[in-house]
Image 1 (tube, each protein chain N blue to C red):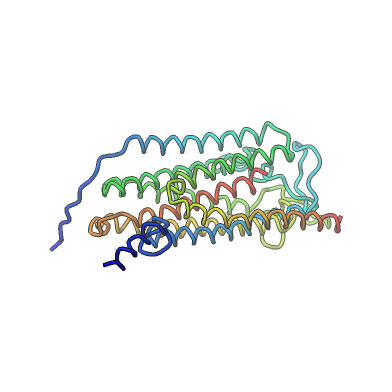
Image 2: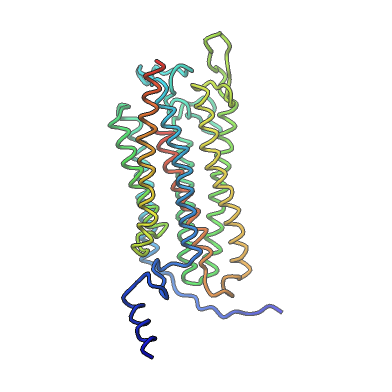
Length: 106
Length: 249
C-alpha cells in the first residue's frame, strides 16, 4: 500500500523566476560581448584584462544569484570568499616563475 | 532558574556561544560549500599551471591571420578550435565552444528553476526542470566528446616537425597544434571538467529518481535538490573560467 502524503504546493513566484531568466540573459550577453571582442580587438594585455574582467562579472552572477551566496549569512559568505586569496598569490608566483623560465631558455 | 536565565542571555548576545546556528544553513549545505571551495582550489591549480607553462614558452609574434601551428611557440586558440560538426573544412573559430557554453548556462538556469520549484514543494515542476537539466548536461558531454575526437584525429594538413615528419592530431607525446604540453593541458583540464559534468549528471539522475518517487514530499523538504544544484552551478562556473583561459586568451 502506498502511503499518500499531503503536500501543500505553493504558487510560482513570478518575480523570482523573471529575475532568474534576466540573469541568464545577462550571462548570455556577456559571453556574446567576449566573442565580439575576440574577433575585433587586437590581441594583447588590454584585451586579456577585458576578458578576465567579464569572466569575473559572470562568476559574480553565478555565485551570488544562482548559488544564492549573496543571500546567505555574512559569516558563510566570508568563509567561502576569503580563502580564495591564496589563489591570487599562486597566480602571481607561478606567472613570475614561468617568465623566468622563458628568459633562462630563450 | 537563574542559571537558565543566564544561558538564555548568553544565547542572545553571543552568536558563536552555542545553541544557535551562526551560518544559518544546514550541515549538508555548508559541507557542500566547503567541498566546492576545495574543488575550486584544484581547478585553480590546473588553470594556473596552464598560465605557468604558457608563460614559459615564447608567444607567437606575427600577424594573427598568418598564424601557422608550430612546436616552437604557444598556439592562438581561435586558430586551433575552429571546427563545427557537419561543417567540414569551414573555418568557424570558437563557434562550437560558444554553443557548448550556452548549453551549460541554460542547464544552470533550469537547475535554479528546479530549486525554486522545490522550495514551493511543487513536485511536477521539479521533475520537469531536473529533466531539462539532465538533458543539458548530456548534450554538453556529447559536444565535448565530439570536440575531443576532433582534437585527437586532427586535420588533413597536419604539421611538419623540424625533422620533416608530419604529425596529425594529438596525443600525450606530440600534437599538430603546438608544443606537446598544449595537448596534455587540453586533455587534463577539459577532461577533469568533463569528469565533473559526468558525475554531476549522475547525481542529478539520482535526485531526479528520488523526486519522481516522492522521497522529498515524504521528507517534507527538497533540500537535496538545492545541494546538487550548488554542485551543478559550480560545474558551470568552472566552465566559464576554462572558456576564458583556454579558448579566449
